[in-house]
Amino acid sequence: MNEFLLKFRKERNLTQEEFSNKLGITLTYYSKIELGLRNPSYNFLNKFKDAFPNASVDEIFFTNTTHEMCS
Image 1 (cartoon, rainbow, N blue to C red):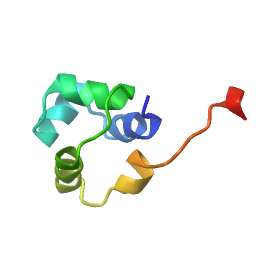
Image 2 (tube, helix red, strand yellow):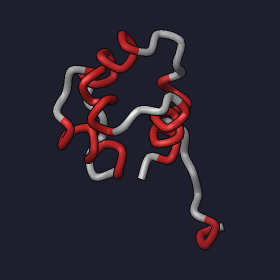
Image 3 (cartoon, rainbow, N blue to C red):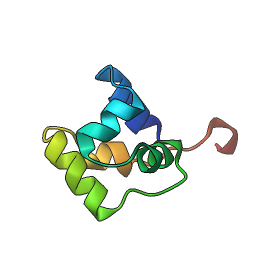
């Protein structure tokens, strides 16, 4: 699961459907990215940056997290 993307969306009080509409992508595709089942494509990242120009793509999509059980 992409916890950073989930937090980002919830901070804006948007549902997955509202968020996907804002990006101009399908709900199914967005949901898979948020759940960590798919990696965001270059096209997705461009749409994200267009919709949220002040957001840090690096922090949301490229921050590594280690599960507490793996530490």
